[in-house]
Amino acid sequence: MVAARSEGVKQLEELISTKVGACCGALTARTRQVKSQLKTKETECTAHQTVEMVHQLTEKSTNDMKANIERTLELGFKLARDQLKHEMASIATSMSEEPMLENVKELMLDETARAEHHIGVQGQRESATAQSEINLATQRQADATPILRDQFQ
Image (cartoon, rainbow, N blue to C red):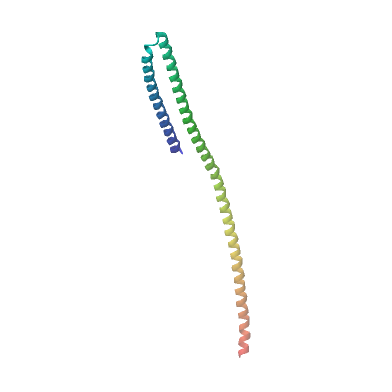
C-alpha cells in the first residue's frame, strides 16, 4: 500500500514537473514572441504605448501560465485524491473482511468440533450396539452348545 502511494506520488511529481517544464518553455517562447512583437511595434509606437503593450502582453502571458499551472495542479491533486480514496476503500474492505473471516473460521471450527463429537458419540453407540449383538450371539451359541451335544449323543 505504501509502495502504491509512493508510486502515485512519484507519478504526480513527474506529471507536475513535466507540466511546469512545459509551462516554463511556453513562457520562454511567449517572452521571445513578445520581444519580437515589441521590436516590430517599437518603431510604430511611442514609449507610453510600448510600456502599455508590454504590460498587456506580460499580463496575458502570466494569466495563461497561471491558468495552465492551476489546471495541472488540480489534475494532479484529483489523481492523488482518487488514488487515496481507492486505497482507503481497499483498506476498509480488507479490514471489514478480516473479522468476517475470523468469525467464519470460528464457526467452522465450532461446527467441526460438534460434528466430531457427534460422530464420536454415534460411533460409540454403534460400537456398543455391535458389541452387545456379538455378546448376545456368543451367549446364544454358548447356551445352544450343550443342548446340541446332548442331542448328538
